[in-house]
Length: 140
Image 1: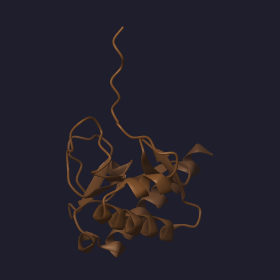
Image 2: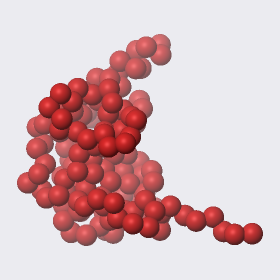
Image 3: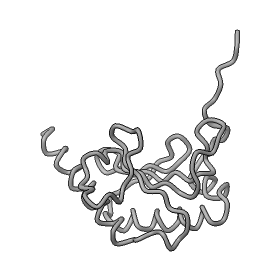
């Protein structure tokens, strides 16, 4: 019987292992992006999924996916991708976020620390939090 091919060649036990694995520039951007996420709401939690950090309140809000963490065998982009799991619900009239061929996820790729506009990114995170809160109210 043929063995099943893994989509990822790494496996981290915690966020510290994940950060230690990253090349310096990707680590610096990831650390900054994590700080931005945590600054938006005191109850945001972080959990590794697919070997990258995902952030949630009631449901998943966003994730940080450095290019060094491959999905499959090939690197498909450079830098660090910041994605919103329900990005299709966000206001994106200025075209800041990309959707690619994804149905729900929208993202922004950062190539250097200077690319990260913390205030603009926070505004998208706050909007994602508001959508998350509204979805909770609809369930009740």
